Length: 50
Image: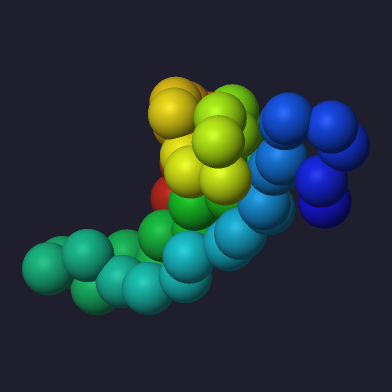
């Protein structure tokens, strides 16, 4: 999603660790755009195990 000079993307990563425990990481990347280029990127995430 893009709004003005800001954008974000949502994502989910699923896998297993070396012990075979399921992992799910949900997150989003926040972007600031300047002159058509990414000037700043921040990432927020939440890890779930189970």
